Structure formats: C-alpha cells, structure tokens
Image (cartoon, helix red, strand yellow):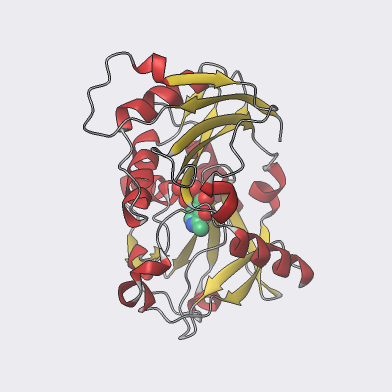
Length: 294
Ligand code: PLP
C-alpha cells in the first residue's frame, strides 16, 4: 500500500460553530512521525475508524461511513465527530486521489492520555489489488467468535458493533484461516450463527433471496452490503436481514464477502467444501460498486 496523502484534523465538537473548516485540516507528510507516544490509539487501540473506497477520485458512501463513525464514537463514549468537518476532510483528501482505486482511512483516537481533545487524522493510500479476489473468489473457514448471539445486548462494554481500532483479533483470525489453507475467515457464534468476516460482511443467496446477518448480532452494518441491497432491490430481488444459522452456508447456492475496498468477493469454498461462484452476478455487482458516483 503506497501512501498518497494525509492530514491531521483539529477536532471540533459537533455543536461548535466552525467558521473556516479548511483551517482545521493540516496536511502532513504521511511517511513522517505524526503522533505522540502517549496517544491512546497506539497504547490501547482506543479509538474508532472507517475505511472508504475511492475510485477515480470519487469516494463511495461517505454519508453511511460518517454515520457509522459517529455510531462507533457514541458506543465508545468518544466526543461526537463534527460530520461537516470530516466530510470536508474527505473532500480535501480526494482531491489528491488521481485515477484508479484508493482507500481513505478516517481515524478518531481518544487522544493523548489526560489530554484535552481526541486525536484525529485521515490518510489516503493506493488500494491493494483485489482483482483476483473479485474474479476467483476467496476460500473461507468458519471460526468460533467465542460468544453466543445474544451477547451484544447483555454486554455492551464489549463494543460489538463499533468499528474500533482494536483489530488484533480480526487479524489473528485471518492468520488462522491462512494456517488452515484458506484465504479468509467467517466468524460464527457459539450457538451456531453466522456473524461477519474479520474485515467484511457476509451475504448469502438462498432460495433466490439475498440474506445477510442482522446488525443486532453485534456486527458492523456494512456500507457495501447496504449499497448492494439497494441495487438488488432495484432489480426486484428479495433481500433480508436475519439470524443466519451456520448450516445456511451449506444451503446457499452463492455467497460473498463484501467490503468497501475489496468490494464483492465471491466465496468459493467453506471449510474446504467448494461453493459455486456466480461469476455473472459477481461481475455485475462489482461493476455497479465501482461505478458509484456522488
Ligand atoms: N465487518 C467488519 C468487521 C469490517 O471490518 C468491515 C469493513 O471493514 C465490514 C464488515 C464491511 O463494512 P464496509 O462494507 O462498510 O466496508
């Protein structure tokens, strides 16, 4: 991943009047040191983030990403981000994007321990090459997430459903999947329901319906999945949020991992068992996702 641009944001509270937003955005050298050692994002992974896909300078689903950033901040008791300021930061960064696929990261950290304000910054980098995943698909293994489906309501302090900077578990799951000869993982609950992948939502086609696990299961509400649902519904196809039993991974006649940068990656095998890939629909979905403007 090659850095293209970065800026620090001087965060303002969402009810502050910001006269000149541009003056609160400070371009920095993305390869130079920028954070204090005491920043809680580095010390404890204490903060929230978003990754936004950008194609030919057009950022995708900025509104839903900013709403999810605000939702994550609220779950973590962080000050509400000023969405106009973050939107201005996205626009500023996109002006540097150029042609092709890039990725913007929005990061809101609790800041320096004892410090007065959160730390916030935005980066722009070249997106990894996802052509093979979109074309050939990904082999997944199911991995136990270690809790039952009703945990999010019983234990909100686990921050399930917040996109926090604490992704060490997610990265460990991908390493475990690779150790088992797969490309990626799908988390499942101890009581046998599908959750999400470490960095993507899961979408299944069963009996002609497109089904994804409900966000109430303490998973992220994927912006890509939301976009794909809107597209499928416009084509008159049925979509649903449900509690998805693990057995549905066997019943599905097609399935995908969906995320902002990889987009729609068909699942080609689950726990070593091949799953058919609908290449035509996958190409259509990725064509639609790549072509989004505004
Ligand atoms: N679930 C997790 C855990 C993720 O990290 C992501 C994306 O990073 C998603 C789902 C998909 O979300 P989106 O489509 O908004 O990228």
